[in-house]
Length: 496
Image (cartoon, rainbow, N blue to C red; front, side, top):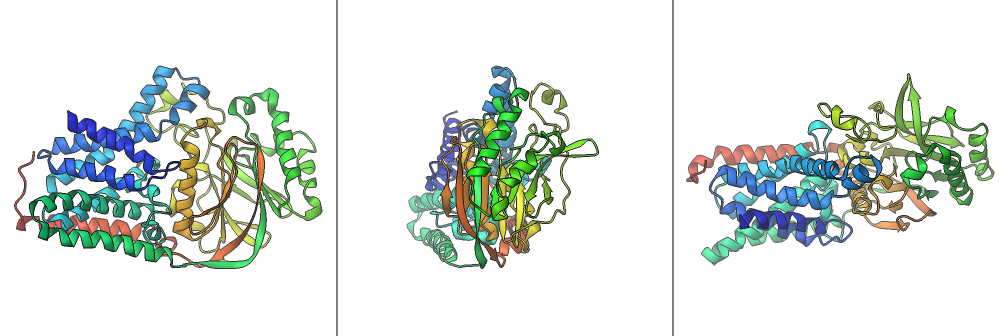
């Protein structure tokens, strides 16, 4: 029982490797303890239980903010909210559980081979978690390795899942190398050299510029209204919210002015007469364009969308990857969804092949909130788009880990795709992230304000931007197949 409690604890400890703390070495420590425990497991069910305990600790600690929206905003009873979070975390924990089970059953050979096998399994497990049933890749371990981690240079080549695999590889070498050090110090050299090579190559890659600025910088105003959902979705406050938006637009100075996701919580034809003309008139003297979140209405169905107003008006983008339980009911969970009181939560996804917005001569690829978790989907707009723009509304999750974790995800996307990521959010974190993953500017969360930034578009492609997840997935599958294929040359452990 103690070993399962330890796995649960180190799983929860891994959350400190992510933002806001960002203690990235803890990711190596946490996974190293898991591998050490798996090495002492001689039954598949024990490996499954250890991986499950690790995952349950990590997800209960890391996505606890989901409880806020269920209990505070959806009207679900606190006990039912807690049960829902426990059930969802248990589902997510199945993926590291499967990794643990397969590792215990099939791992063989020396430290380097076993570490490679664990890394390949970890990549496949996280990719499945981020893909099956529309996917939920939040807290993929690679996100913990944004700068200053020495692994950050790998994002542009292998993406977050590949960086996660390298994290797992280093962690396994730590665990297995320590075991070999006790057994025979001479056998420690190869794992130590392999670990050093990963760090040195990662640092070297961080110095490599895959992309370059394209044209003059663009002045952009990123607006943060800081409106509580309980206030925003009260029909009596509809006009007050519109006035907050207008006041922020009036304060802005940029050529492109951005309001966040659902800043206008209605279709355009529901707005008071003359509002759009007033809004665009505020920026007409400088020939600026306003981009705002709103709800598009097509054939009686609503879409979570963005639209350009003023100069270069009429361009739209509709969210393609919707949030389960927030924007649609997953199959088999309609009964639960009916218990949640979430406004505008039966949405229709946008088309797959939407072009970037063309604003002030720059092509800007828009993604809405949750969509920036799926790096491979953002590659659809490359290399045409020189900038990325995320509009979000995380007010539903209160003052929690959600805001800094989401900003760290944006940093990973910028590193992967070699494009600046502009972020306009309702409550935080509104920011500019550069292609090297640096947060150039950010507004304090839960404060109303305008972030004025100057940012250049970029041209060129990273390897990840061109190939997506395919190379690292193929490599992981090849590793598993090859190592299983040669397993007969090594004595197997007695597992069941």
